[in-house]
Length: 227
Image (tube, rainbow, N blue to C red; front, side, top):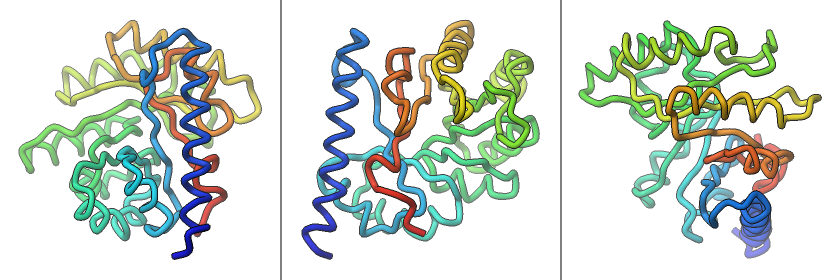
């Protein structure tokens, strides 16, 4: 692999890190308050490895099968990495997802909650989860609808005994994301949830200002999709 191939990813990564630090400062938040989830979906292992070698350890993937093809070997080399599933999860993929991912950010329906609980009981551990909220109520997008989110959060905690760490959203691409981030933050606060996964390459500064604890950045680091 050429040095230029490594350098472009690292240069873009450091630019995002600098941008994130500036957003934290502008929002009056402490340096390092926001975790950067490097979204490596559709990019091959050789394009990811420079970030791992530079010390970054937090990554996001959209699809279970794609992640299974590249992350077991990377985890063998870098066992302290943390991998988040940030794409929709089918119930029949729960066993594979729980074996590979450290955090599932896209819990959004009772059937999936039941499957996660059942697999957790089978393997003897509780999955770490974020609940995805469809803040824009977009019919084509995954996520529990805002009007149903309060009850679903409580069911996940009490009925299915899941470890709910926070909330996640993807605002409509053609709207100002700030009201969506504010709505998610208010909902998380109401339920005492400490984590907020919101903000991507184009809008993470607004997400940081609204209280994000995790931003999911892919294109700004890796370039356009690789496969």
